[in-house]
Length: 137
Image 1 (cartoon, rainbow, N blue to C red):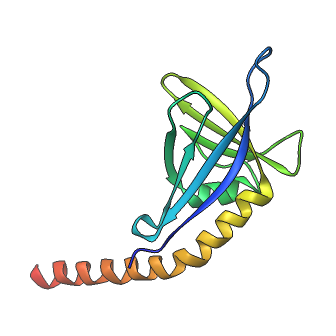
Image 2: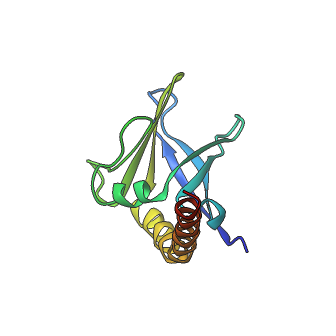
């Protein structure tokens, strides 16, 4: 059975003046079918929705200390201790979106509770596959 849940929050996209900050409705989705990932969909007003997929543990670590390398980085906001900055890099450029640390921690807490069961199942499946390989050798 595929367990999944959705969490909705709003981030603040930091744009240079005169545009100023833009509120970005964001959907965070977890499914035990892909139990190591979070699907984060950004609904930027006037633009098509964009989804990024990355490890949910990165999101959790980033609420405590800077985490991530490459395209996705998450870190406590240096000027707002109750917030977290998410930096996304693509060939077209980069964007920084700020979220409530409490919102992200709540989501990660629920994921952590649900993923334990999924990770256990994955481990058992990997053990069975390894045993099949070893018996066939």
